[in-house]
Length: 448
Length: 92
Image (cartoon, rainbow over all chains, first blue to last red; front, side, top):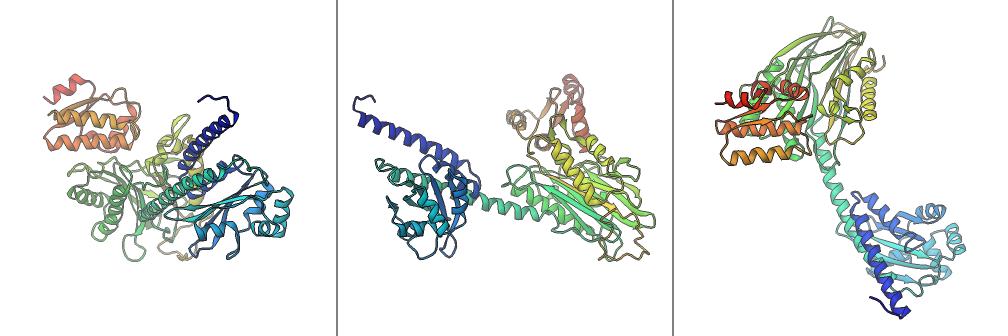
């Protein structure tokens, strides 16, 4: 559209600007996956484009407004305004907006109106000295939340732009949609986290003579449950033995998590009647094949029996990378023999391998999220894992777990899609589990 | 052959099976890396072909892939061959 009339041309420019602004707003808002970043995006859109100061107040379950964000070109002003929420039952424009559902425009605030908006004397002085007497509050109405967006600018700065209220309302509508989506995303992520927690013990057991530490890092964006699981549990009454298991179900999502939970609890339950890891894994395989699950599982299972020389370890592997044993001299040994992964054939090839673990030595169980972490030099790999482990001889379980976690995070250049879990079990250096004087409440042996 | 690329192979195998081919050899010589998603495609294909009394053969896997096939015991279940000719000959 071309015209000689400057007023018409100005109007056309404004319309174009407005569409460009709202297009940017939609893009920025819809890219926000959590509530905090959607709020942050809203503030960034408003300041400085259409206001000097932007306040966002959200109603809590009782209907009281809480300031969730204040953004200004002036950082000090923003910080000062962020700390004051609107006082209930006042003439604060945000409160009026919530009550009426209608926008509130104050073209030139009186001192009283400015005091209510400011919230305290210091902020009143700040707004007054900058002549920030123009304000516009619009409702943010979404299914899951209610709030107000308040834009503040110097008096009369928008006298000629009657489109600002329209833009603000449109912006608040788009923000409401983004906030709703963010809440939805957060609740599905919370569900994923809850489901994930069922795949591992909330706390590792206190085991006399053993020092335990575990790490788990979720891969991907967080709303999807991974298939990694681990567990440590007693295999009989008293202190006769323990089972330690780690596994990985192929794929992600609720279905993978359900199969992980099945695997974890089947292995626990199988211990009532079975002892050999290979037999327990064969039993799990039988159930998975029988259940007609389309996914497969890899598992490493270790039976731990304390004896006079430390711990007698029996390892069975079903398609899982080998547990590693860190000897006292820093030598690293891969344990167990390759065995068929679970859920592929009704006749799996599974076997057991027995190893003696001495006091002060550590066992490391892990999932392939650790060894397949991707960095500039390719994959982290088992060989790099062994090199890093070799540096940890004699360390406590926590120290080893910390070191491995730091090493893999420093190595990887991109956030992994895959989950990563590992479990470190160290035989106490002064371990005398059968006849010793230690008690289970001790918690010593955490330090080397 | 990872989470981002494995669907290409899955679709190719599914199409071959839909067309009535139950003995399939996959030339994996050019595959540099296979993760658990890639493994999922292989296992899925194996199960599907097994259901038709068929078989899956992998041809010329590299070292990393051979290591994974060994780790998972799949080298005992699938046919692993050095050339396509060898694979087709052995499956009759």
